[in-house]
Image 1 (cartoon, helix red, strand yellow):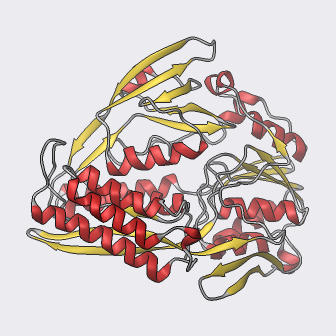
Image 2 (image 1 turned 180 degrees about the horizontal axis):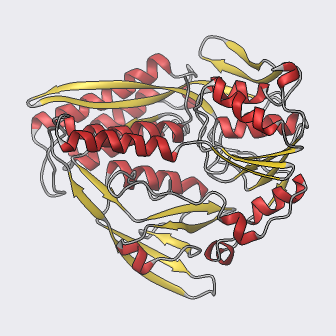
Length: 453
């Protein structure tokens, strides 16, 4: 099973957050302290393991032209100067990010706290906006959906920087205060400092206690948030697909419902990708013949990724696919196949451009109080589509670009879905369209510390 970088971060980091209760982590450090020799050695070991994993498994033996040995030595020498875990983790992460690969990154050990920023950012076109604000948080008092983010912690937010900010502030060095310069839909600019909600976690967990049952419920909540949703209206089915991680029977069942309708709107917005097998089954359900999705170009060989048709059971109606800046990996591949094969119309915003194939490798170290867990995502193949191009760092431009304004967000209007519905032969009110699949927050304390997710 293969996951996009964002999908992998969603699952691995979510469950790492839950599992932190049963695993020890490094002690907290202040920026003024020098790391004790034992902790420093452990961080250096993480750096070395990342270097070696890439050496053995990265899809490009030439490391995309990067002097991999030289970069490792450079980072290793800087390890002697670190004074905090955040600095050490940043060096390990920085080494991996040298490859400029959306699917190759460091997964640091989980922290003994949960943090909730209270807001989520989203790129719309080339501008960043507040997309969601959590009720009953400091953000709820100061931020508004539809505010444009001019700067985030003094940095300009763009498509290239947002995921890096999300990764850094969410996993390497969480913030106590977020500093945002905002522009409201009416053009007024203001500076807001938003406090982060921090929840301390116990280091040890007994699953027979209430804490143990709470963890199980939290896992169930995550799965609930990732469920497939759909609505039917006349001759149109609208399917909200949050992730490519469902079994073939469920895929076939949903397409069975779609076959009762003349048109299907497949909403892949915010979908980070997922399993290759799900992607193949999805493509096979909309073609009456075998279709090549892409060529998987790995370290030693190239193999085609092919979807087998479901024949007479394939959906033959009109197809409209919705994407946005958070549609990644398998979501991008599906939409692009529809374009290349002229099977459907793609509507929305340019996709993430995070389309490689990677595996997650778990690592661990023995500590004085137990095992320290961390990991790496390593790209093992590039995916070259039938037009001989990769979507990595490029993304997919929809057939029809529909970008909501800050005012549209503030008013709860979903103009992209309205346009998709028009193409499918259905009339939707913009506000009602925005209510069809409402954003759902996980219970406080179980959300990822990722303001860009």
